[in-house]
Length: 204
Image (cartoon, rainbow, N blue to C red; front, side):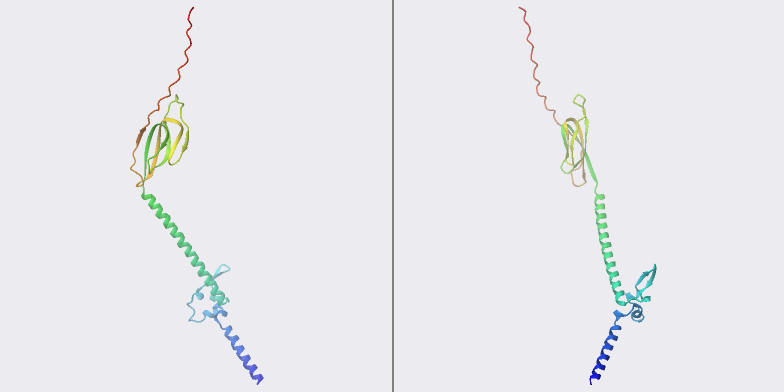
């Protein structure tokens, strides 16, 4: 009776072991793909590079579980690469759209000639791009020094006879350009103090 139970247990263990050995995960790729019903599966078509040569996994002794892990990793890597390519393409398309929009808009500029001032500026909607002193006299000290310039204004260290301010804007964002002359009045010179008169000597 005892020997019968032992024999039955041994037979069951042997059957279980055989079943585990026949599980697909424990087969080699070659064994698995030898089945005509499995030959068209992706794992049977997968290739790898060995010593510089492309070899089908079905021609190796690699376990099926290893091959499937490799196939899953390759699929995930391909998906990540495709996602990166899609993101790069989207960024390139956005940059191209911005470039086309910028090219479709023209830049318009105007020149403002300002006299008798130390500061130049632009009309609303325009940005200052350059500021140049165009008239001066050596009697007044020659060229003035440009102390400040930005996209809103320029400023010299003293009042200049004349400057030209160049202002630009994208078409449609500012009024139509027009070159203008702005004549500021020259402030009156402060009265000079009279020199003291020397007393005239009187003869005795």
